[in-house]
Image (cartoon, rainbow, N blue to C red; front, side):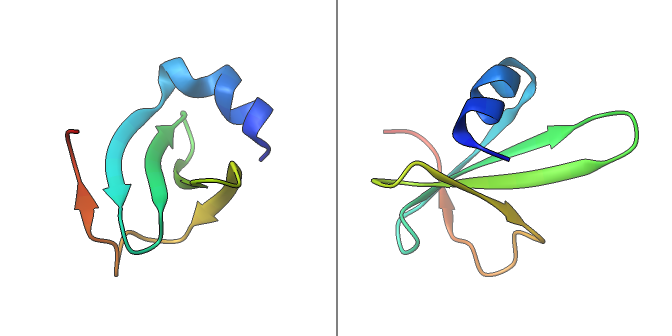
Length: 62
């Protein structure tokens, strides 16, 4: 998935939080068949598919 693909789906995605150590925003996306979690790496705007939330320390708010 590219950043453009993600932006088109943003209204259907749920913000999970920000991981300071990985400098990554984390979003989840569900459709009828799958639940997927993606991270957007800050500074690079690179989208990565996450296999789980294990090891992430998510913070909400500003």
